[in-house]
Image 1 (cartoon, rainbow, N blue to C red):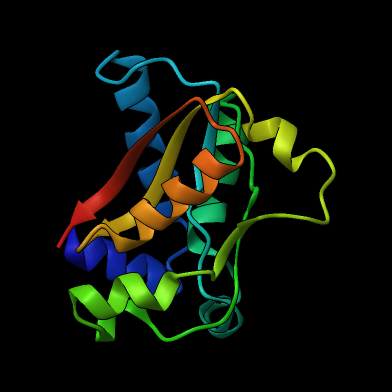
Image 2 (cartoon, rainbow, N blue to C red):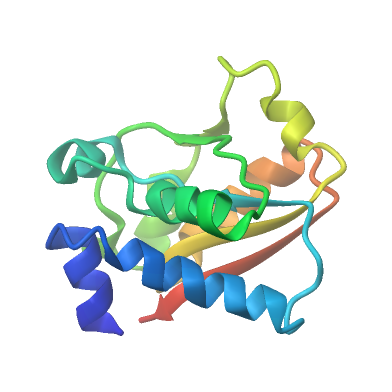
Length: 154
């Protein structure tokens, strides 16, 4: 899985988005997770998006919407900051503090979150700092319940 995630995220193998989206969709169809109102992808660092040319989790979310008919809301935004992978546990949590938010320029963003049961998706769970901060922001925006699903655990 590590090689697949790296090839997708850093090697430009964007076709793997279909594989990952298919795995998420099959978990949802199997009933191993509760029914969700909306799926929200964790946002990538702006520098990473510029370097890769795509937001890897938004691409998976687009496949979930287009090919699997699942409801997706790209409502989280991330301001620039250091890469999480080079930081320790405590530094990771501090690095994200205040860097994530619900999109302000989208008038519907709050209504896509408030009162909803959300499945938050991300690529790799290492310390949980990204998932925790995303969940905190979504809860502050009024989400009723937040679950997370990652492609891999490091």
